[in-house]
Image 1 (cartoon, rainbow, N blue to C red):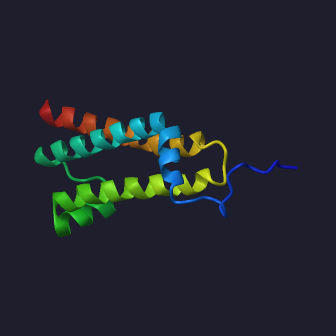
Image 2 (cartoon, one colour):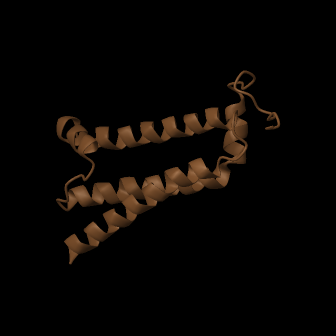
Amino acid sequence: MRQASTHDLRTARPGDLRETISEQRPWLALLFLLNSLDMATTALGLQLGIPEGNPIQASLLAGYGELALLLSKIVLLAGLILVLHLLRARYRRLWPFWLAMTVPTLLVVTNNLALVVHALL
């Protein structure tokens, strides 16, 4: 039988977000770094004429411009962090969730860098 966690969805309080951020600081730093690199390499790629590879983001870019694209990435990241905060109340170990968020972002950044280097050569 599973032992009850010290955190429960019914007892999670909004103030606990600071605690979540404090406990998860290394993962947050890595995710922030990778997303910053994604935004920077995306902006550079767009300046070099490389099209946005994500069809949803490409339609957002076509309809509303580069600022909307970058803002959508920021909103998505904030939403994911909020979801992880809510999951923290239920699960003791969050590293699989963090890993599931960081690995795809690392692959996107790697792909962006490869496309930029190819465009520059």
